[in-house]
Image (tube, rainbow, N blue to C red):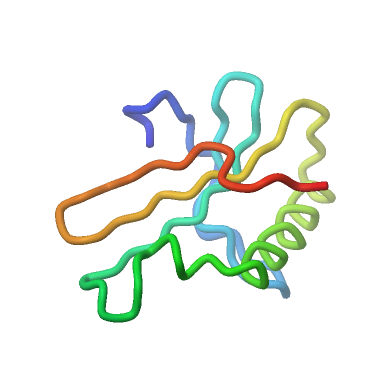
Length: 97
């Protein structure tokens, strides 16, 4: 992530809603990063594991983070998908209304 220009703010941020794997900053944007790994595609790709329910938990966890660490600039959710020898980064993986 740092090689992509991110500054890691915190890792493994826990709330009652779940865990945010990474909170990072890229420029003026605060980024909540979900990291998913699969050793095989037997149960689907890493991306498929991030369901709408999981997204909602991440949004609630991010809101909790923002209550403790106010931020008045841009926010987004990114996904890092790891499987076998590949690493894929999805910037702005979903929209928050």
